Amino acid sequence: MDTVLLATETPPGLAARKKERTRQQLAEAAAQLFYRNGYDATTVDDIVTAVDVSSRTFFRYFPTKEDLVVALGQTSMGSFLDALAQRPADEALLTSVQRAIENSFALSWKDTTRVCSFLTLLHDTPVLRARWLEESNHNRGLLAGVIATRTDGDPSGTRSLLIAGAIILAIDTALQVWFDQDDEDEIAPFVYRALGELTTPLLTP
Amino acid sequence: MDTVLLATETPPGLAARKKERTRQQLAEAAAQLFYRNGYDATTVDDIVTAVDVSSRTFFRYFPTKEDLVVALGQTSMGSFLDALAQRPADEALLTSVQRAIENSFALSWKDTTRVCSFLTLLHDTPVLRARWLEESNHNRGLLAGVIATRTDGDPSGTRSLLIAGAIILAIDTALQVWFDQDDEDEIAPFVYRALGELTTPLLTP
DNA sequence: TGCCGCATGACAGAAACTGTCAAAATCGAG
DNA sequence: CTCGATTTTGACAGTTTCTGTCATGCGGCA
Image (tube, rainbow over all chains, first blue to last red; front, side, top):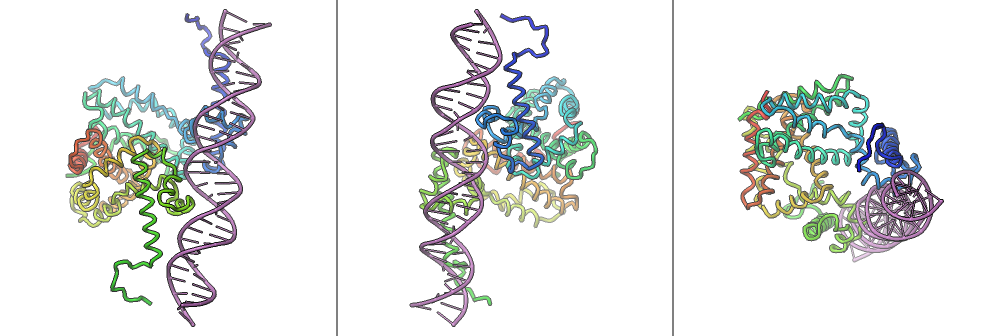
């Protein structure tokens, strides 16, 4: 059954490579057009013309035009969740989160100009902001699951959802603050500072 | 200049009343159709047919089909912000928020079936969830402004945004938890409980 | 080489919008 | 009440996103 793969360079066949290549081309062409002309002003037709595929093919790769942007912003949330899940459960959650970030998001955040371009796109395209928030909302559910296993609590209980939401919130807020005062500082410190705020009560009784 | 208005019953002219009436009719017809058939399955044509106006007119009242749902969910966020702004600045923020809620959201939350219908709509229509989150995100900015004036901090500083975000987060989470275990309990206690959680650190260092 | 499967392209069409312009209703003044 | 100005509406054409369908063709495999 299993063929021995020594040259794992390109495990899948030629067709699969071509497919992945087309996907990348679409994403890249779209990114350039979006950053140059804006999201709304860029039609799917513009994108497929640049890559020379049919518009029907585009929608086979990306269910909607918005999904294309989600793919662009694909920070490594999956890696983050994996990394977090593998931290020891008795470690302080803040520490676990920081360590997990170092092995996942931190890499994407190195490319500040890329992050800046992406945040600009979100900044002045309400529909994309909405889509991204929905993505964050989805991730919140996943994160709540991981957190619940650490405290063997209810993944859909108030506490888990609140903590997960707060972590996502801190990250998003940090990115926004970093973006607003756009010196070319590193992003990570902003995030760690925002996460640090969560160790103090947000409301005083 | 000013004509003396004794019968302030209907200050604006006949046209304005008619306009408002059409708006209400559109909203109500849409609500029924959405709740009955779902959001996606309901076309703008269905809605305008029910009210007997042209589809072009619909888009003069609501920029998009989504905005119609936002109007349906119009909880009194404006009232909440006003009420909060008028609380004494030296009062504990949690208390201020609770009092402000009592005079704004609490009223809308009385109609649990209505809230339930709306949350159901959000639950199984991703695009509406996204839109609603964007709305929440906008409100977060406004709330951060009010909070900043109390602590004379920076409205777009990390702390203000974080606190505002956490409050919105607590409310949304409470609504979701209430919705998931749908006994016909009152909503307010869920919200107050979630807000109470914010008085303890969400992360331990 | 020759067959199979899947990706692609070329349609046609639904549905959400938008611009434009003429008809109709409302309003304000005489 | 009438007339003209302003506003609201409807009709129409057009763009854009997105979907179903079906025939063509390329890559994979014997």
